Image (cartoon, rainbow over all chains, first blue to last red; front, side):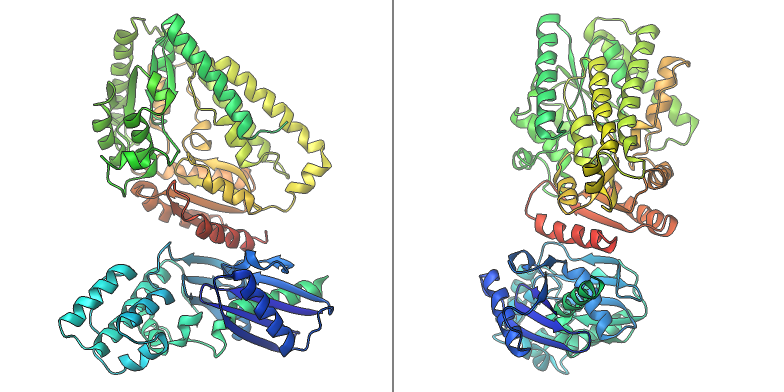
Length: 257
Length: 381
């Protein structure tokens, strides 16, 4: 029996297959049709792992699009799945900071990867990947180039947390002749400030892992670490924490029954 | 027997018709009240009919925002909006309003509300701890008593007051007994059902009939213990206590129970915050009312440690697995107190806690759903 986790996020759809030893992952962009994104990732995973259509399988869907996965045997929130995935990446993990495309969250977890408490940002793009996307667009850049652009620059102060207000603020900074590099550095600082605001409300201790799409940005990770005063690590597959967690929880379910 | 919104609506329709009839044919005055601090006993003893006017609908909010700040709590905006647009039949029929100076938002809103309908504000002390506060509050109730006597032309005798005290005590007891059906090994009532059975808003014109209805509902619910299918359906569901702002709007209650939790208890104005407080029947009636009403564990009082004690008692007696705190946006008092409640629930009682800050609109339902589902998952639900 194969255990498959599908995590439909607002920007990317992630998938994972777990067999008790190996973890296979894949990622595709989330289109407007969430159901289709789920089907695409499932097909690709089945190809990668040579799973046949009639092979027994157990699918757990997670992420904001979890209700669109018609083939799912079970649906679990991304909070529970991220906790479990982060625990799999490093069993010493006690705090997960996850920043995705449209939300950010901090999760305190126990020694088995179980959620103890968590906090999520409120209905807005502040402190999320969407904020980065909007800001890099204003700079005529791409999300993944922002870090390079900001390298060694003195960060400009960006006060607005709101993506819409911050956009106007960035435009007026540009008009004042502030360099793109400084503004890029300011954007990264701003997002880490917003994330810290969130994490301030839960217990942070032990090993802290940074997951979600935004965790690929090491400047934000370093800034977070220096603000909290703890080294924050990530994992090459950090973006897959939700999908991996779902697949692992599914594997446990199969093994138990 | 289903205790759903249809059941509630049918009760409310009967109460409404009867209230209007008593106003129009018997000339009974209708007195609107807004908070749990105003004793309906005095109103009833004056031969008038009390009606609770605090509102839970998003509908009048936009109109209310023409006068009130947008970032004010939705309960205040909705209550004011209904008055402003004259779209609440209960407000429409009210002859006079009694309001309490509780939180900042409410007391300032009442200044505007007074332009729409005659209103008397009961000045609430800021603490319940001192004898001076009690004496002050007693004096406020004396003022209300003579004001109602003037307004209705009826004398409020000690006998009449005592009679109403007994009646309202019996009504609170019957309501509490219904809640207590959830203290056993298996909960017998969903929070939504408690809300529908006990939440009948309307004219308090026939308390004995309300008591009878509550008792009938309780006797039906009690039978569920012998229904294996029902017991199976509630077995293993996380038992949730909702605390905080009044559940005037039902979205959180619905989300929790749709996600597989069961709200076994509610600690809020109409719920277990006030139901355990009986009015002493053998003391001087006005003094007994003052003692009882000032001790309501509302966060507009400082300090308000009584609330933490009530929460602790509920957690133990109702075998609560997790606590959800509802904070209406802009409610500073409950929002700040959430810090102490979180501490009390997690460190003091070892239970998980989550605070949901929201308003009456539906735009954040998806986000709240994720939080609640994750919260239930962490309890194994």
